[in-house]
Length: 128
Image (cartoon, rainbow, N blue to C red; front, side):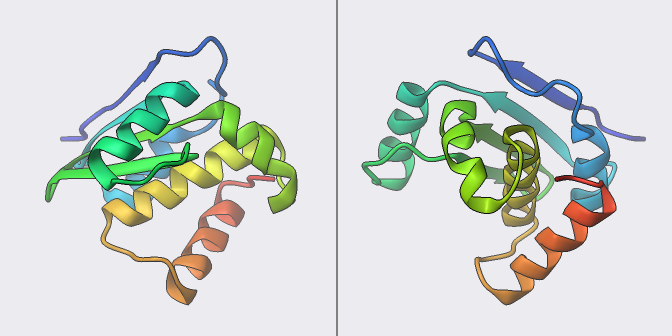
């Protein structure tokens, strides 16, 4: 049985048309229970400080809760500012951040393997 992706937002604008559920299933599987929250800069900075002891506003945070349950938080305001430096549209960069967060939940760390997988999923879902 497929577990749905639950999306919530505390900000007014975020890309609603991206294939989040399909990306989640492709990377984490149909039975992975994932929540995705779009949050503002203040909440993102607070979560980063509280759970990672980092004092900057992140673009994405991912938290594995169990082997089959996790959470991803994306800050669209930060994503919008950073998108051009990654040669992606603001919406495309949010999709990239979601892919990045899913790969962390899958157990990947930053590096060549993760970079290759990110490119694979960007291509598979025609993200630009």
